[in-house]
Image (tube, rainbow, N blue to C red):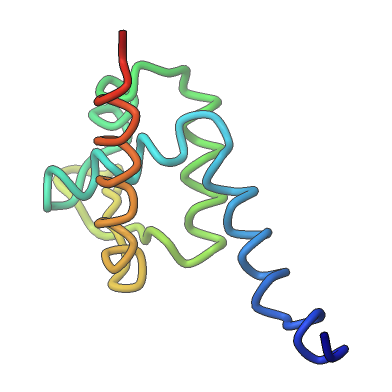
Length: 106
């Protein structure tokens, strides 16, 4: 295998993405945002993913830093969160993973 093929920088970027997505509640947040199809406030996300404020806050920051979600003006003073267009292209993968896991539940 040629050195260029073995060291494709896309592998490193994929590792970085998977590191973020496999953290507690990260994919769950993205699935909820995709399923709702609209912006959601922090408190609603926290309730729907059944997690602590600290965990949800950390995941939202990490997902924002990786360009997967963005904060938008929502109702009231708190902003709301939506998937970016890039993240929306990942939605079929998340749903396939979810369906794969759900089909194997015993």
